[in-house]
Length: 572
Figure 1 (cartoon, one colour):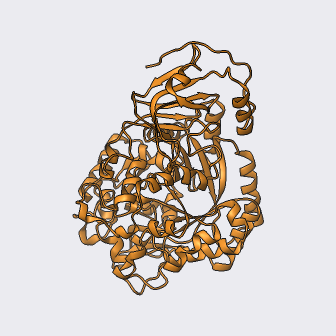
Figure 2 (cartoon, rainbow, N blue to C red):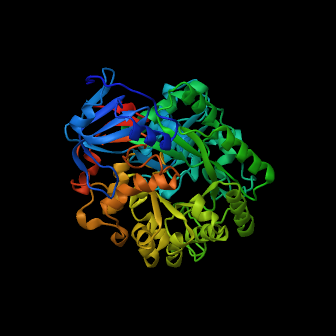
Figure 3 (cartoon, rainbow, N blue to C red):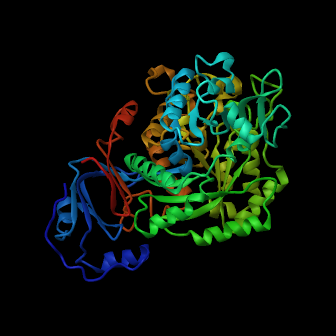
């Protein structure tokens, strides 16, 4: 409900930028507000005590005053919108430092499979989509798991999909996004036969007779995906709207795209120009092996110059060094516990990768590197260390950091590398069906002590930032914070924690989704805290998360989300 209150004069408006705003605050006692949030429990930053019964005043998209409720009320004018929060918890907006915006839009508008509990249910959803969309040229789905109880022999085969769609191509991308499952028609469209060789850094899984099974790993997925028709603009816009609604519902005020979303930039830019972009987005552009050419670097520089605002910006360069442990494609130089003959793969040669990272940083780019296995993590740190002082200024990141060597944990702080991690993926049986024990089987008990080593990284002084890889796992930050603290699936008993020596505290986890995330995103001057002069990017929770049992965090509601002083979600 919007309330109004009495006027005060506005003698001048702030200059652009935070310094101008602070001068304005110091020099204008007649300040007035666009939005006032009253009677809140205000958490200004993750290492401070909440201000009980405080209020926040917002003008021109920024926080201009924090103080007692009556003090803020006195700054209102007739047009000021007021929200009386009744003691609810007002916090900085959550920042998710690792999402895939286009994939999220596709997931919300395609065949979603993350919550499917059986192979039969997966096939039934494909059949339902086929029946509901008879004119669609393809059937596309995302997020199947590896361990359905009714999956014959644990092997995905095109025959199961052919039963429900033999005339139209079907492509289902896995929960890890590093594999896919195609029906016979999709393989036919892509020209994949028994004679088709595996592509570089990819595998066409085959039946005993050598024919393709329909299970594709890593870059083999692209052999089929490149034949899918481009989505219509209205379909993309509809998917984006759903993605934005979900982000606002979860209290997320900034997302950082982890590559593959550049095709959305013109549409996002148009939304920004029309004032309809409801979330801040930073985007990475991928540098693919085998090397970074001068032309590719120039393209990245030009893209950065084109998109460089507070709402939409190219944040840096993204490299992929390995795959994932679940599909034996993460870099494990010492071999997998369940397949000692396999070591995964490094997608880049060492010297070209280190050279590309150095040149990217010399051009002023932040560097992200997907590195899950210890071999990839070590190489990513080698490249950052070789860049010298640039690393401390540009805040390079290692994405995922699931299983580093113990010696490499100590390197993060020393060389200025940030660990960008996705805590919902810890013990993920509550997210993906049949994943109990899969990660452990790949890694072995001897190496488990360094699994998702958040505690060890913080103790070593490393910067830590949280994200989700959404839509790979759900976007809600409360799920990630809970998992980082408890290290057990939803509904699991208290004694079922997984590698609990690596658990962190609630304030540390909250920091990794707010101040720590803002630092990793290069936005700590304007975001991640509630302070005068910062952007009014805020979320309101139904209760104080610092005082509830961590197991109950997911039950808290995000009742209000504000981006740049604009309400994007409200259930008050």
